[in-house]
Length: 409
Ligand SMILES: Cc1ncc(COP(=O)(O)O)c(C=O)c1O
Image (cartoon, rainbow, N blue to C red; front, side, top):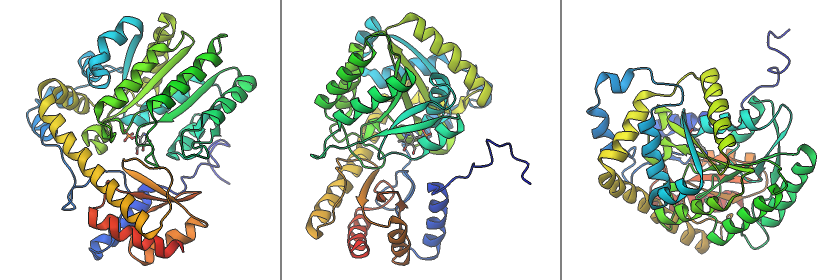
């Protein structure tokens, strides 16, 4: 007999990237030729962990209170303000003039996603997820006693599938009268796809037309990789500016990740930023998400908030230069991957840039096992293999393409 509740009986993490990552690290410690292409962290070309100097300098100078004291549950207003400036950049004043904003500090982007799932759907309702996705969304939904529906991410031309997006939104509208939909952009995990401005205009139009009759729509904009967009910092911010066109029945929740933007993975720091035209909705956002944060993790790392606030406020130029270096590193690996894949005829899902790329294949689990015997550790998905370019060098990218080609054939 199990001591677990009925609800908990079926809880078991499967295909856990963190576990596979540990196996890969162990293998690499025994054999340096092993390629560990598993965990979504950035490593430099010499194989070392990519640490941002500005982040390190700022953390060394913090006093004990800035590092260890309890903060309030929603977090420090200075942290919120520095995030608004970072995320909305030159559009902040314009956005503030037409939208209401609120912010809750969270343990990583993950905390922002959990909070949103928890407060905008009732038990057993469905969250709308992309067909190719960071699979932890499913686990987070399950944890909040939700189920899920998916929209096809790509159309037959390899672009964002607006038609299926609309169709599935309509389906959920008629089934449950409200919609929570997740878009992870740019540099989508696991494909590395980045939506165009035109595609975002389409998304905004669809959401507006579906919600005009009063149907609540929550767009969970997972912007974990926003600062690695191949087109530069500006392109994604221009897309965000489009959110000012939403009607008052729409709420955008932006999930910010300190892990990805500042390399603070293990510190567990991020934020949930609410953006809406409605005064009532923003007050509700503050109340419910503050309650859930208190109920789930109580408060978010003061150390993480202090580091981010100081980097954004005191060293924005230095940090921007370092981030630019990291972004270019990824772009070089992306270009190396695309060229080599083309050369050997390795097919992949539409990929621009970013931490990951996905290669479609039959029997991903078998391919995964075979790749391991050749010293290549990846993450198997339902539809293929996810290769992590952020954690391997350019030479390893090229070797990985050849190993993949060999094993998939
Ligand atoms: C798509 C996506 N969203 C959100 C996250 C959350 O990251 P964190 O909680 O570390 O900020 C990740 C992490 O890998 C991710 O890949």
